[in-house]
Image (cartoon, rainbow, N blue to C red; front, side, top):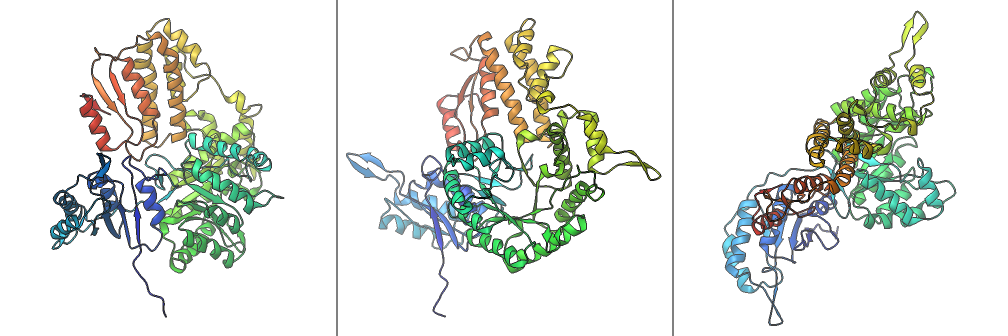
Length: 597
């Protein structure tokens, strides 16, 4: 009875370089804070109101509760050995009036360098003002201490890297057993480089102290990997060990009803306490659901409890409809894939706001490694078409469908949808037998082949589309016999990149494969550069400022544009990644550029 609720205000300090001191972006901070009962989020210190403008606008567009802004009186300048703040009472009041009236800021004030005169002017400016009513767009996301990772990806599914998982990766187990923490961090970074959006972390290894291992590993990953973490364990104590080190918003993988409601509830309570998302598997006290109806019924039960009883927002829930093998030949396994696909479709259609996730590789358990890649890839495509939002995959173990041979694709689909053919009781066509036959003697190494195409021009184009570097230099040498290096880039290789862009834009090619294509392009351009006359000096055709915008850390495409434009006679000012609008415009004016890209 003596307790009382007082307002909670959380302030962040964004430095002049655009992030917090640790490198935390405003979106990452907001995602980490949003699950908690915080009444006001705002900014203070480090800079003046002008430098805060972009981040204040972001807060007002993305935070549904009150926003506060308490700037310095500008950035201090050293004048005669003293810190001098140049923002006058009038100019500070003008900026804060704009924030409240036009952006919807609720609380204003002054930090370093402000005086009673500054605050008097601010009070006078806003005293009769009702803050603008804001329309807020909520972004369902996780975050690391560096970046926000939206759950909805524009042209991809949310890719969860699976190799830092002792349950499924021998390399991870060997590194864990050797307590090679640096090696494990390198393995995690490799997943990030391959295009993972989130990193699955699992230390479940018989005979080891899992909680101790999770403390040791998570404490290193949080500062060495930029993407958010998914703590994966059958034991909630290990998940909590990871949560104790993670400053962003993580995902817990997973909970279910197998051991009854107490264990199911414990993971939800952890998610609530630490502000995490949660994966819920379609398993109940009777075991793993095999039919779409069973999967949906368990998901509906869990949805009602998680949202109503435990207060977990729907868009912090991922349902795992569980992929079971279709590779055994056992009759009861034949429909596993199609039941999972239909289960995903029902969950996404009937449980509003939730996400779906799947560990894809279970579907092909026991098959030849080369055939597993094809079956996993086709199944993943079908699941995404049905509404799958996220997949736990190793990017090197899947392929976009444009790289799958037509016959393999047809038989894989027949296997997934159990399209056996019968003459009476006799099976005359079994896709499992046919699929196995197609891959007899095929290894993942033998499956790697040189680029498709009859002519050197076609082969070079497919080197880029398929991201295949094997034989690339030999084909470039052949092409140089008939074309200049610049013509090869402009008229052949860029045609391949255009196809990659179209496939990515239509969702037929995912980010890891775009990165593979970009790496093949970079390799080709690097090989051709010595054959090109370097241009881009005083006689350049024009000047372009290139940058990756704030919030985007990918720079492969930008760097390719730099190389291509420079070698076509343009002067390029490459600003790098995560640039603010002000930085881009400043460079545009400084270099008198003709264009910005």
